[in-house]
Amino acid sequence: MSTMQSAIVTGAGSGIGRAIARRLAEEGHAVVVADRSAEGAGETLRLLTEAGHTARTEVLDITDPAATQALIDRTPNLRVLVNNAGIFDTCDFDALTAGDFRRMYEVNLVAMFTLCQQAARVLPEGGRIVNLASRAAFGARNYAHYVASKAGVAGFTKALALELAERQITVNAVAPGVIATDMLLERAEGLDGLRAQQPTGKLGCPEDIAHAVAFFADPRAAFVTGQVLIVDGGRSVGGTAAF
Ligand SMILES: NC(=O)c1ccc[n+]([C@@H]2O[C@H](COP(=O)([O-])OP(=O)(O)OC[C@H]3O[C@@H](n4cnc5c(N)ncnc54)[C@H](O)[C@@H]3O)[C@@H](O)[C@H]2O)c1
Image 1 (tube, protein in one colour):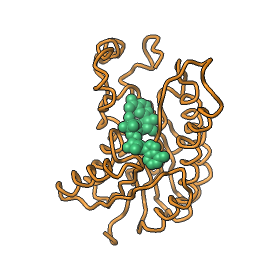
Image 2 (cartoon, helix red, strand yellow):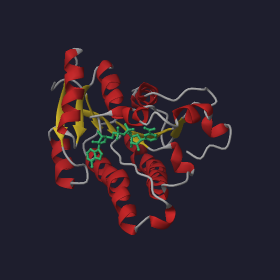
Image 3 (cartoon, protein in one colour):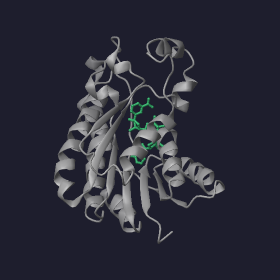
């Protein structure tokens, strides 16, 4: 593992993060599967190692700066950091509390900032940071705290891209639309309605997002930085979707 280039993927214990971890492993990285869920991280590790890839888990809460520093310290040859871990919930605007807002910010934005800062101190020329924003960053109903946190991710990505540009480290974000993760598929009712709002007639899958992340992470994408790529099957350019 020590001679391979490493990629850290936070939130790789499920959904989109698991697909990103698999894709970066397929492209030859030693992947660090970082998640607060030991069970989820273990399952991702099993999938990767059974496929012959090099990977290990780190079970941590990304809101703990000492834990994220230890994660960086234990990862040799770091080239790619993917900030994918995030939380989501819905709440009527009138019932939303400042505490709800702060919790959303702590995980989706502040923890991401801390990890970026710690990683930036060791990333080499050609290093890559990819953050998970959301199509919701551009506006949606019933989760203003999530929308605000993801708009923060988009803005922070642009700012950091300029901070790190001279060192030839790129920083970009992927903004997924509705992606069929297990959580969504369990909610069988309403799925047909979501599909009907998609120009493609399909929901996205985690691999669609992993492909966009892999593009930004590619060494050849050296002239692409500070970008937020919406990956939503065209929904953001057609119709009046609220998601
Ligand atoms: N699924 C979608 O439709 C969608 C759409 C837009 C954006 N996104 C974003 O994509 C990312 C992944 O989403 P997903 O659907 O795969 O979600 P998910 O809930 O399936 O996975 C999130 C992972 O992050 C981990 N995590 C959460 N908080 C953590 C913490 N404090 N420390 C360590 N790990 C933590 C969870 O354990 C989980 O494994 C998120 O940032 C999400 O906001 C998802």
